[in-house]
Length: 199
Image (cartoon, rainbow, N blue to C red):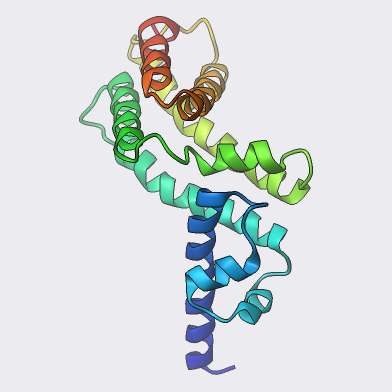
């Protein structure tokens, strides 16, 4: 295979992933067909199966792509050493509230959406979601550990336990936000996390 052929194949794959992110976030896994993904990606439908074994394996890669995109947001806040640890967490949660307000409280978190839709039925996707949620919680845990070392947070609970609870609460608040069509569940979650849980 030539370098040009490789480049074309890589670009097709990239466009399919981008198209899948858009379609799955808008319509979910079951509401999205391969033809819609190919159409959004502006590639022939047949090229999908040249790059992905199945829609399920494709979805597992979509989870990776979604998290890697969000990882840039997480790094922006949690690697900011000019802020105290809890201020990093607050800045991240505040930005997420501003983002969801800006997009009119729609779509929510793709990882949460796919968890509700697929975790009971698609093991490859469930496993990938677990790994990425664990990675996300790990970023929170590192921040909490730093906050405990700085005396900002009690050491009564392990950082991993607090981080898991915070992520679970936040994902639940996003779900309620979508149902209630108000940002209030996110604001309540943020305030409880920072003012009560992490006092």
